[in-house]
Length: 438
Image 1 (tube, rainbow, N blue to C red):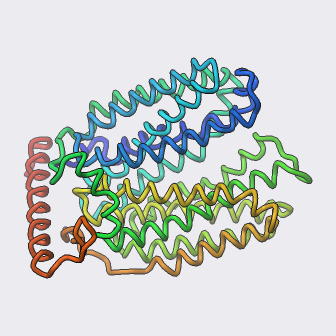
Image 2 (cartoon, rainbow, N blue to C red; image 1 turned 180 degrees about the vertical axis):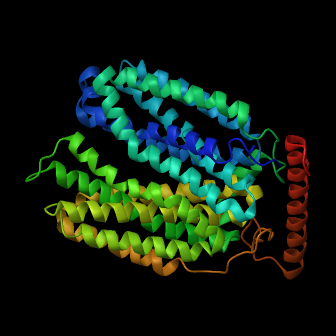
Image 3 (cartoon, rainbow, N blue to C red; image 1 turned 90 degrees about the vertical axis):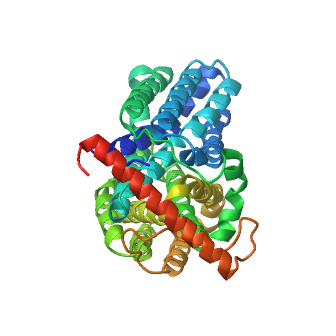
């Protein structure tokens, strides 16, 4: 197994993640124009983000495990090419059915962003894994934050169809770069792809820390979606009645999250991920408390959103690092389980935003998010900091969910240590071939 070439490191995976994930959101400012162009009601065009989310969940479940089976340069290049093709299909759609099918495919292909995170974490040295994952998380965060602004500006300048073609061209450029620069060695999984898919649900039973990561991450993503959707609805309605461009500008407050992510990665490498997650979630909770003051106080809203986004983004980077570290050789499968459940819980926050805003008002909605964040901070602490080079965590249960005997755990631990040694030897040989140095 090779590490990323030194000329790219985690930078190329970060760029791939950001430009890919942006395609789930760039169309949102143009939905009214899409509806007018296709001659359908706005609620019909509003199904496009839902289709993208459904596609993403499918991609996380079915495509992320491929990270454990295919060479990174082939896998990422193929998915970015498929993303470009799906964007071209959406740009030429003449009816809502074609557009929704295209966005199911787009959502599935954007799962390459999560694959990039797993690839960067797997091929990084153990003492640098947190920094590598944080770099990719910064790219994803930048894509999410800037996608709506870029999509809206390009729509105003070129129209929504040509805007999609611009993003398709970016995906093709990413495919060319990935094919040329990402690691070329194919992983050596213990099982085939079908067996890997069948093993996804039992991973939750086998790895206690994965269960905890899902619960903790899901709680803050629930709060994240609840706050942002409710804020958009509150600002769009009376007495504020802001237009979409003005509402979109509030997303720039989250740029603080991009600045703190590299720092978070270094902290994760030096301390326990759980300690970093707890601190970040408490920062997000402090931001949520400021947001409870209401949209009538813009300075409090801007500062609150800055703390809120920075805390959530940084906690996600540390949590992903913790998930990958459970067993780097199965990082694709572990990340798949985590993200499917993570996005599912987040979707609940999205669905509850409007009802909670109507029933409890802005303050009640923010207090609900605050309660979720405080619960996440309470559940986050666990375990100790692993030493650099320590073998991955050994599962405490069999794939069928039965507890392993002491003899079985000893044998599994020995096999895991041997696999870790083999991976180190392969990485050392590859590094010597690439750099000419042992």
